[in-house]
Length: 240
Image 1 (cartoon, rainbow, N blue to C red):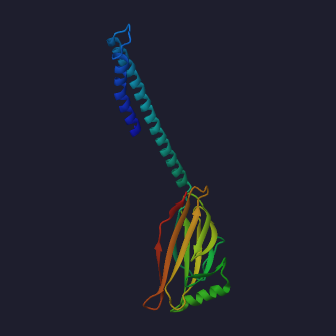
Image 2 (cartoon, helix red, strand yellow):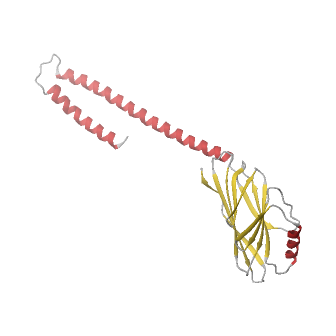
């Protein structure tokens, strides 16, 4: 019951007896009914009105509770439908060599320090020879990173855009599909560099918009070799 209803109830509860006394018991109009009869009638009448008001308030409160329960249930059902089709992208990385198998959905990025220079869809023989040569060098300044994305969720990832150090490319990853982002990173002047990968995508019914971000840190270690480590962020819902 709201504060306004409570105040109204007290005003009515105090005002009715005063009004009855002024109009019925304290007036000088002749009546064929005694004050005791009037009091009995008015008591029953007012008691009935109070019962009706109590029933009305109870019904109103119950309707509010039912509406709140219905809204809560609708929210829960909406969330469950979203989860039933939600894609979930598992990401990890390893190094690759010239024998890597490239699928139609894979992408190749040429990167210099933290700048993505070029996007390609296949390795040429020159690329393969370069990778083989650099992998044999003792102190190479090139790192070949295979960033793998596997959709282990309940549905496909669509309306997807992949950003590699700010360079965007459109993709779609079906349920249980794995896509490779092959990053050919060249380190100039031995500067520590970050390979920042961001995945923005939706489910097939656009019930949710998601984001997954990883950063691979690359630097020259004390033995003059390139090393890397990854910083991960959990997939998060950014819009629904």
